[in-house]
Image 1 (cartoon, helix red, strand yellow):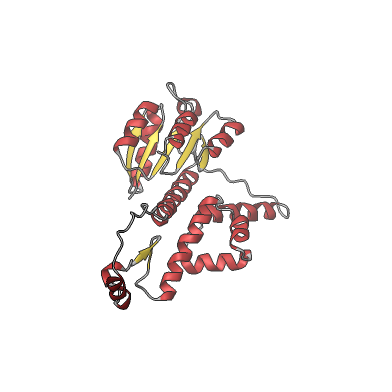
Image 2 (spheres, rainbow, N blue to C red):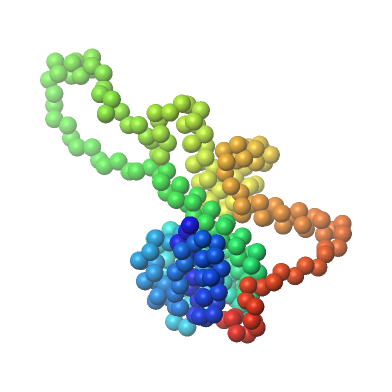
Length: 262
């Protein structure tokens, strides 16, 4: 179960998205404007935010920029709108939004985006936990006598003084397990940093793409976002050989577009 915040000035959209996400087992919080969203952000530990772009008091992109500039963008944000332009979607992505959904939102697309967002949030948390903690400056040590120094040098360090963990990797485990744990943190960090671009991650890690895919599968790292990108690429290749079959997904909003769009 995840904590998800839905921010939209249309009560019908808030209620419908809340019902859908609650049926998926998530705890859903709602906000009708940016002010209520700020309050919910400060009160709840959120795993994902669905944020409408056009709102009466403060638009969603401005609120996204505010969270990013104040260090509050610790959760994935998915933008929503029925009238936003490509430029607006690109701007939102540049300031930290992970995806843009155009209203009316198809049920499958909504649930896929939510699953990808929650997985992205899990990776972000792992990266933050693995970040090194800066050490405090060492205080000037008092001079010690030669005899005392020799005694210390000849003795073994106590077990409690030896660190058992470094950068989130437990050191008191077999080498193979420690290596797998480090590689998992390493690849999750670069996947987030390179926005799940397998080409750039492979180049950064110095691996062939096929080797990288095998390594990620071996480490149990989910590739929900990248998998969708690959599937889209495969669909584009398929369309050059045969005409695609028309397929219409039922929109989430069963009522008229005018009623639920911004």
